Image (tube, rainbow, N blue to C red; front, side, top):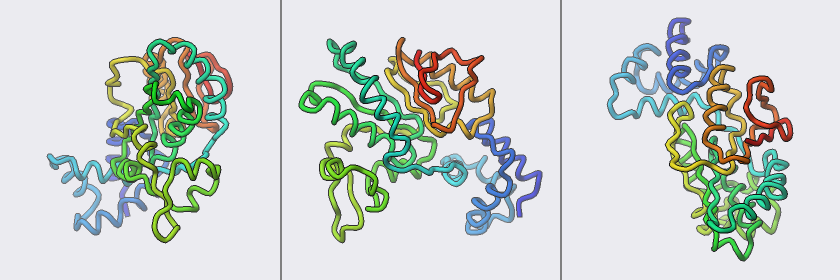
Length: 268
């Protein structure tokens, strides 16, 4: 069982390095790491942390992050956002960017790929026959290399896709042998760029984004970290750009520079 001192060491590390607040999650931290630490033959959590800090490959740190970041997502989640994106945001952008035909869209908590693939499906659906004339690739980042591997693979169980409309299932997925799994078609896969990225790091973008999806990730941050992240996001959005957060998340109306469109939709 993890000691208070060991828990403090791990939670302080995750907060400092990744902005993730685990201060109330001692039982979860213990549950997610205990078996891995036993399997790796470390005598306790401190021994693991010592080994991690000396590990020049970064492998043990990746393991820690993969174990301690929750990645619960599904197709069609909070689809009202994507309806708004399709009906309001994309017509605006199509008009405004008609000369360059270059849209910059970032999904900052990509998890196992369902959300960025959905965004890419909406984009392909919206632009239709004109899609090939536009650059609408979605940048999809996550802190966890484990989920990004799954996202890049693009294989999902049939039950994970049960809420996806039939016409989209046929258009964007291939049924695999046995019929219990589907693979994302290459034409959709090519529309999403998956990259590992820590939201606490400086943003590496050369140009500002038109739309940022940062859904269901700020629940892991304290208020100060959240405010700082929201300010960075604001700075890296084009004027008039949109930010979507999770429907259960909130921004402090007093401190946010954003215009509030709906409780989880914001505009610069």
